[in-house]
Image 1 (cartoon, helix red, strand yellow):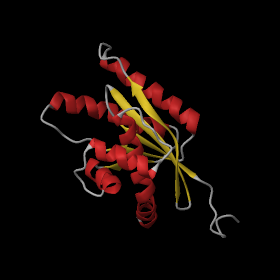
Image 2 (cartoon, helix red, strand yellow):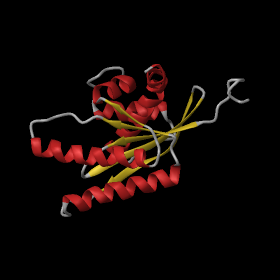
Image 3 (cartoon, one colour):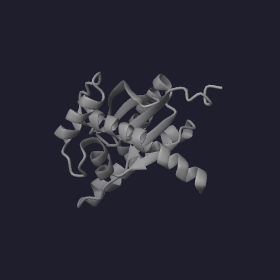
Length: 174
């Protein structure tokens, strides 16, 4: 009934900016064309811990976010490859955890390239972190992310909010 008259329930989106030291997370809610801020933060790991313990900390932290906010959809930033292959591999492992946690909970996960996130938020694919933070403040006035990772995660969630319909249509057509 609500679907027919154009009223749907709000959709909660979890944005994740994966990192081995800090994995940023941000939750937004969309209702029609309104976008709202629900929460953000970072899951921190200890540099002195073994890699497996750090990945487990990311897993457990994201599980708490899923339990607290019950998102309907998730979005993760795609890994970029840099000159340090070892660092890229570790980031990929953190990203794998960031994708598996929502997927295991039955939450669909989308991926977005960093340049698409920046273009969606700032208007240019090479915007810097300060520009992203400023635009998050404009788009989500109640948000006050304490770290760049949390701001980036909100940017990923907002990007998904803007692009999710085209993804849904692609899945339905395929």
